[in-house]
Image 1 (tube, rainbow, N blue to C red):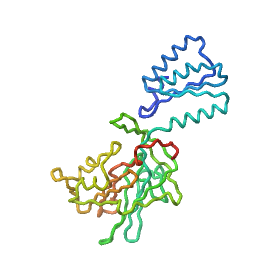
Image 2 (cartoon, rainbow, N blue to C red):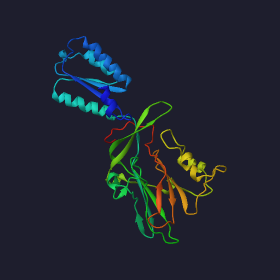
Image 3 (cartoon, rainbow, N blue to C red):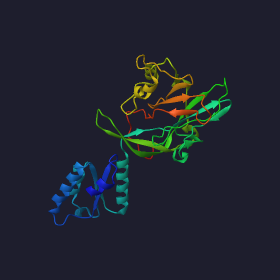
Image 4 (cartoon, rainbow, N blue to C red):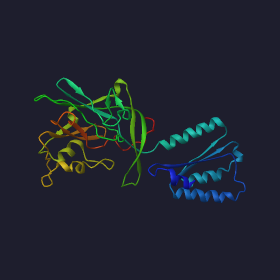
Length: 305
């Protein structure tokens, strides 16, 4: 079994085994061998859920509970098929209730000259969830940056509006973030399906959208958006290419600005706005991928909540 995990398992994901039996080891000296295999599994971070099925008197509960304990799994008993299905459901919920870094869905729009522009992506947009055509720009699995393409007349104002949404379904990405203080692993999630109800969309007010140009500093960003936390990209490192080393002030081109959005639930986003390029190159580049629930990080059911 351990060889199969070595060949086919993703080391970034939990490794789970299921031991289902309707009886006892025969001969009984196999019990020691079973315990040895459980210890091997534990050394390889494989968690085993054990299930006794059928007549309780036929099951060696002591052995099954010991295997589960050694591997930090769980023991269950099911007398019939209905109970067995319930056991499998309970195990599935237990496996999916992992600590997660949650990338809540968000989007934005640009408006100028009476027209509204939605974010685009050069790869397949079908993979990324959307709300009324507004793509989720906070998808950690997106393969490329999002952009806007539009024409801007001289003197026309450019308005940016940000939104956040509720999610109908959560999906693990395979990514893992580690809290270096506690050593705990947190699994990175994405939202493949945005809730399409009218109350799902929340508009981010102007007081939570900040624009920085030459002369502003990274301290201004920290004052507006707060300090980065262990699960987020460090703002200073991300902004470093746009900052003067000696003065800590932004050095941006006349057509550039840094936009910071505070989603008021712990998730923040930084973007580089560049205006005045040829249409087709005009873009809003997704610079920082940091979106998290109001984290004391919650344990979320993979399918919602």
